[in-house]
Length: 388
Image (tube, rainbow, N blue to C red):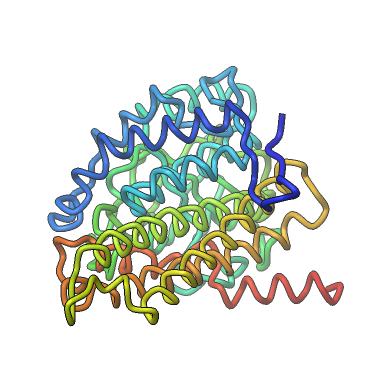
């Protein structure tokens, strides 16, 4: 049974199963993620041990079919999970999203043999996965990628580099887009590359504004040999595979923004209820009340929008792609703005690491860039409107 919208309140009425999924994710995040998030951020520590703990909960293959250990859930279910995890740590939730996107590509486009070979360990979180599309010279223009794969006997030999890859150097498998044919999208293919592939190496860990708990490195291919049996689908199918994963990925990253922004609003509500100025708690000043009211209104609008977009993707609606782009643009913009306003409401304390607000602002800023920049989302929406 799908979630429904209550006509009187406009609220999504989740099913009992969806509420149970949401509560499970919230409980895990509160117990295992939230108490450690600031320490992971400060130390730039990748918590592989805690990430692997999500496997037994079914979070290693949220929308992977159940014959290989997946949970076979829908996209709205996934949004609920990522939102719940992000209330504890958006960077942690985002990595779980990236892993799931890579696993789902193997599930959707891999052969039966490939699915059985890779997915049981991925769904159990025994193996972690990263997604490799972006390159130093091709971000938004993904069809211009230069990494090349050339058939050589029973192998493909890859040469090139991928940029801004989350989990690089820590993951066990990399779902990689490489060019096997001519220029343009039709020349791109998809490969599953194990971390021990000969000729695979990684750049230095990038020093980033946020997402400090995630390693972010270049993935470098220098005559990297990959068995031909690791080609997903067929030569030339890679661009379609990459694009097929992006609608869901955009919803996931929007959910991470929503959860992080909700955490920021919660912190702001608690702080303004305690902090006193001019003889009163500052939440008694009308200017601050209006600010809190706007933050709540914007977050609830973003939540309804996101859930509606996820429901469209579950139903395979004809306009699901447009809605995914709109939700990604709207929710990530709102999420960053709400977190930034929450920092302002904390005054000078918001700038201190121990209060957790500045981390949320740093973590949520990149969501306006990931999975297609918000400017590219506007291009997608506009093309859908004018029929291009």
